[in-house]
Each structure stands twice: as structure tokens, then as C-alpha cells.
Image 1: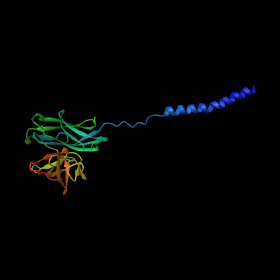
Image 2: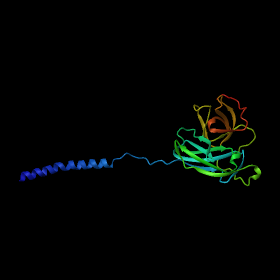
Image 3: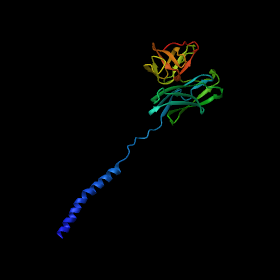
Image 4: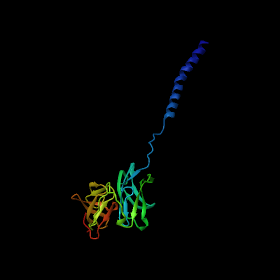
Amino acid sequence: MKARIHRVVYLLILCFPLAACNLQDRTTESSRGEPTEPPTGPPTIQIASPSEGAEYVIGEEILVSVRAADSIGVNRVQLFADNQIVRTVSSESLQGDLAFQGILNYVPQRADLGPLNLRAVAYRGPVVSEPDEITVVVRESQSQIIATPAQQGNVPFIPNDGVCRALVNVGLNFRLGPSTGFQIITVLSSGTLAPITGRNSAHSWWRLNVDNRVGWVSGDFTTEYGDCSRVPVVAG
């Protein structure tokens, strides 16, 4: 009898650590999981200018200043006028910008007379933001305009004097020469307006004079004003 009891006790002692090990393994396995990142929401966008109800005349350019943001990067922004895409501006960076500021332009036509809905959306690749929108009013003549709120944000006044100028639509690298291989002098903010003093032979890069500094920007991210037909081709 004593021998049998000793044998049972021995087996219990032997099995206890094994059971404990099995329990520990099972607990560890059940608590293990793949680490997950919190889901990233869509980009956000806000129209900074013009203000709701601003008035314009047929043929008068509307400059729409927008601010967009995303935790990964905004690649592009689009402007819609009454549900039609009228302007797209993109980030110069392939990764996009965490904080994106841009200026998009549209010239209303006779078909736009009366209230005109302007809507802006931002994209992170295929992911689209909720839109921000305002309504402006398009008049037939200047005499019909009651009041036009002053431009706000980073929208400059563009003189109608024929001088060839470039308006920087998005934050843009200002380089020593006309290609991405040249050193960056600084980054020009959207809304920078500067005289164009030269171009490359492909007509794809502009030489600008900004605050007494000479440098180059890609024409893909600018809007040109004035008479630019006589801008000379210059070496970078």
C-alpha cells in the first residue's frame, strides 16, 4: 500500500510542472497577436480664400487658396467648379506633404453667371478627403458687384502690367539649375510671385529672381502671367 501511494505522489509531482508548462504555453499563445497600427484617416482640406459670397466678373481669375493635411502625405489637390474638375495641383514630393498649401486658379465663363459652387478635395494616393466648398457669385460686369472681400491667406496681388511672372502654386524647391540634380537654395512657399528672367530650352524650367536671389523652379508647379514670349533661353 505504501509503495502504491508513493508511486501516485511521484506521478503527481512529475506531471505538475508539465501541466504548468502547457498552461503557460497556451496562455502565451492566446495573448500573442500581430501588432497593429491605428488606421490612418483620410486627408483634410480647407479653403482659406476666397470667402463665402465673394463676387467676381466673367473672365476675372479666381485664385483659390487651400490648406490640406495628412499623417502620411497629401499628393494632390483638385478644384471643382459646379462639379467639373477645373484645376489640379500636385506636390513636388513623391511622398506628398504632411502640410500642403496650394493655390488653384479658375476663370469663370458666361455659363457660370450667378452662384458658382467651388469645391476642393485632397488626395493621398487613391484616398480622398471630405470636400470643403464655398459659393461665390459671378456677375456680368464690374458695375454689378456690390462688395468683394479682400483676398486672404497666401494669395498675392498680380499686377496687370505685362511683366512675365511665375506664381508658385505649391511649396516648391528653388534650385541652382534647371533640373532636380541641382542643389536646393531654399523652398518657396505657395503664393510666391516672382519675375521670370530665363528658361531652359525645353520650356519646362523657369529662372526666377526672388528676394535678390537667382534660382530655378519647375514649370509644372507654377502659373505664368504677363507676356512670357520674349523670355530668353539661358544656361543653367
